[in-house]
Length: 104
Image (cartoon, rainbow, N blue to C red; front, side, top):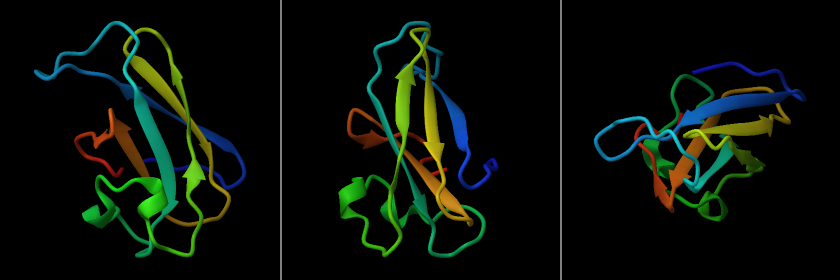
């Protein structure tokens, strides 16, 4: 869990691992991510949207795009700018499937 200021770009580092949990040391993983305001306004996001594509989430709040950058060393920088104050959930997928722990 982290904090970001509304209107300022924030960055989260995603570390790619293989099926056994060993960290990858090369790029090429295809991560996708999006940020979404949570309805509850507190704590960890509900898993109700786990694995849900951004266009399928049904709430009045907009989905915030996340720019992904493959650093080429097994890490990926996820950059986003929250447009409203409040608790948000960061959804991360690899190859169309949610990664362990998503949403964050």
